[in-house]
Length: 181
Image (cartoon, rainbow, N blue to C red; front, side):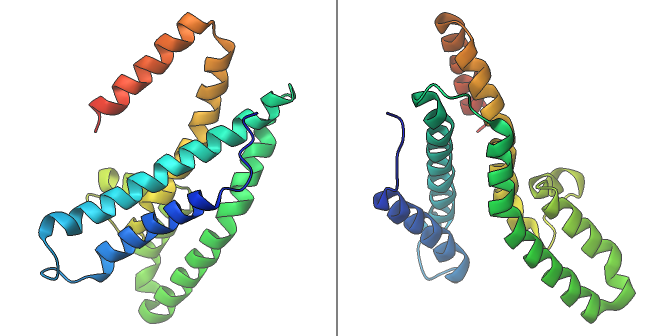
């Protein structure tokens, strides 16, 4: 059965991943070797993304174990209701603070920041705006949400294909994922 249930070890790995990212952001340059400081954040984010992919795949497989139809709508609603409310609260606090401190002059930059973060597109600020904005740190949430949007569609499409075609599709995405890194 693909049902995972709660696995405390995965919570521990997720905690280590978050601590590696915090270590990167908290320690001042010079307190550790340069390679360790850069590596800690990348390793932490990579581990977190891999765990998310593993857990999401398990959630997508659960209904198939009992031969139920997977309900993508319910899947998307669960992801949205789990992740968007805390993001919305943070964005409201961010906007209120910046508007209180900067008045009307802060409206345009704050609006762009909030728009990109709320639409889970903060990772695209690097492309469209040239550099990360104040909410640029929400790029990882944007990448994760884009994965949650696209992966289930590709996953179920591949499951419907014949085995040989499915293997070719998976191999294609595997090669593409390595070529863009």
